[in-house]
Amino acid sequence: MKRINLISLITLLFFSCSKNKEEVSPDLKGGTEYTVTFKIDWNSKDFPKDFPSNAHFSKLIGWSHDSDQTLFKTGTQASAGIKNMSETGSTSPLNTELKELIEGKKGFNYFIGSGLGTGTGEIVLKVEVTEEFPSVTLATMVAPSPDWYIAVVNINLLENNLFVSEKRMGNQHKKSMQRTRSHVFL
Image (cartoon, rainbow, N blue to C red; front, side, top):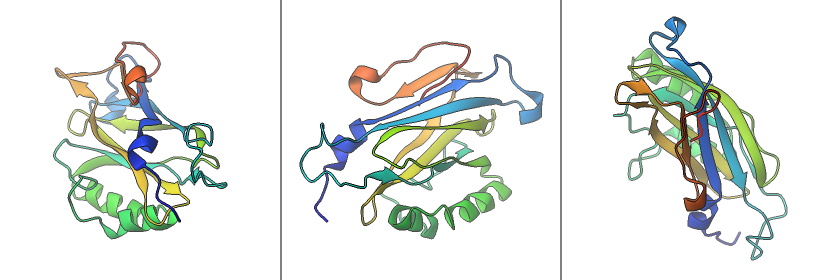
């Protein structure tokens, strides 16, 4: 398969999250819940050269953790779970690795969302963060590919000791931070 310029592909990823509740939830140990929207726009019009006929993305998988976690950090050795997710799109054994990290008190919760059967669309899921574990990392396999994935890594939702209402990351023209009641976008 021919190479795709992943830097260009990543610019088509737009990640946003919004807080579902105004107050901190006692059920979440001083935390809150967010709705995350992972928007992807990988299409043949913008990428006409070598665009695959069966572009799609695996299930979105990730976790809430403290800001010191390095599971998906650039320059580190990929775990068996990350390797399998990036090669096959499977959430296993990555989900087991995340469970073990959480059991070892290195994270709060892990999340598995849906996949995307085409190169364009949205994956939406709920994530929970706490004051102790305010950061989110999420990844999905880029398919068809031999071992590519895109991810948002270590997005901190706690700023100045307060949970942000909304956070957005993506293309320069889409970057923004806004305070709203219903959504935070990463």
